[in-house]
Image 1 (cartoon, rainbow, N blue to C red):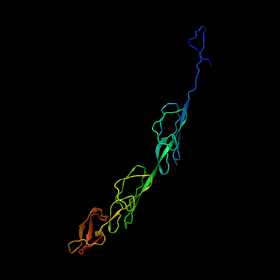
Image 2: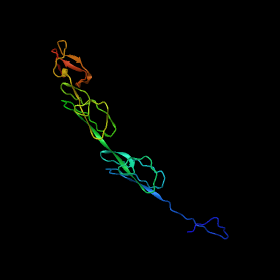
Image 3: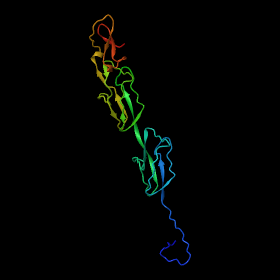
Image 4: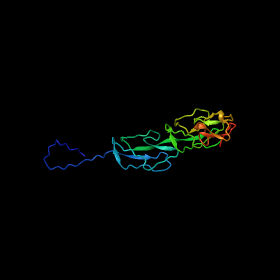
Length: 219
C-alpha cells in the first residue's frame, strides 16, 4: 500500500497499481408521513456530498384525508423545500400536509328557500368566494343583506380562510313594507304590478302583484 514517489529514479521496469478509495455516496428516500393512499416517489440514484438532489413531485398521487399535499420536507413537521444539496448522510424527504377547512351556510331564520352549498375545501390563507342567494332564501318581513361569519354580524364581500371551518350566516334586514304595512297604489279594477328592488328575495325578482286595497302579497 505504499504510494510511489514519482521523483524516485526508475532504473528497472516497474509496475504501478492504482489505489482506489471508495467515494462516500448517499441515498434519498421518501416518507408518506401519514398519507391514506397513494405511493411515495422512488429515487434509485446515489449522491456525493454537495450534489444537488432533484426533489420529486407527487407522481404516486399521495392523498391524506382532510389535507392537501404541500411538497417535501427533511423533517416530519418541517416546511417544504424546493432545492436540496446532499449532506454527509442519507436523506429522507417527508410529505408535507396542509390541513384544509370547509365552508357552510346557515339560513339564520329563513322561512323558505335553501342555503348555498360549497363543496370545496380551503387551506389557511386561501380566498373564499362568498355566495349570493341561488337557493332563493326568504324570511317574512326581511330582505337578505349578505353573509357575515357570525349570526348578527356584518355581511362580508370577501373572506380569507383561517385555521378552522367557516360558517356564513344569512343577515336579514327588516323591511316594514314586507311586514304587513300598506303600499300606496292607485285603485284600478284589477291587480297591478309594482316594481321593487331586485334584492328583496321575491319569487320573481323585481315584481309583486298588488290588489286595489294596496296590500302586498306573494304571487
